[in-house]
Amino acid sequence: MFKTELHCHSKDVSECAWVNASQIIEKFTKAGYTTLVLANHFNRGTMKYLKSTDWNDWIDKYLNGYYILKKEAEGKLNILLGMELRFDENINDYLVFGITEEFLRNNPDMFTLGPDKFHRLANENGCLFIQAHPFRNNMTIVYPHHLDGIEVFNGHKDHDSRNEIADMWADRFGLIKTSGTDFHYDDSNANGGIITDEEITSMTQLVEILKSGNYTLNKQ
Image 1: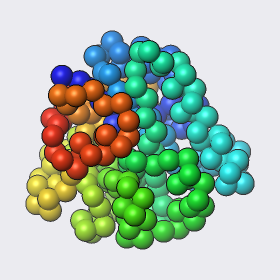
Image 2: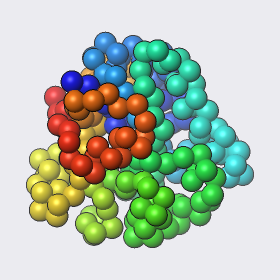
Image 3: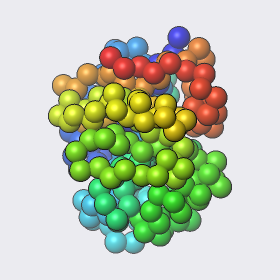
């Protein structure tokens, strides 16, 4: 059995995160994970935090956090590139699985798209579009047909994400279910993700597994 974390942030990119690459690797390898998706915040606030106004410069800095973690984790943990996207319209957050550097560089207008248009763009490029912690305070309900799935377990220690409501909502509308630690702090527990029979070593493989439903949610 193999454990994959789907929702982790690093302080190299996410302003609200307090963990560096070595801390992330230590925490998740000790907890028995073999794969981790780095899903740093991807929004205008992070652009400002990284002091970027040019899109390609911003992508360089965003990807740097991924490359730092990937290098330090070599031989210890599989690191996959994800993102937690926020549009300009509200403070909803969305996990996107299947992105590539090319996808990021070719879509400099993505903050303006909103769920409907971005969902179509994501699916055209082989990505999955998942609303993170959809029932946390101040989140806005999204039409289910504008999503591929929702995060039904979010382990952030400082928020009530009302995971049980998210789980029922996913059942009601036939949405893909995901689980994530939403890891920000060194004293947070590694308590989310999925469990599979095979080790996940690529984002293409992860997307296919999430589509297939051949996994168990880790909800500790």
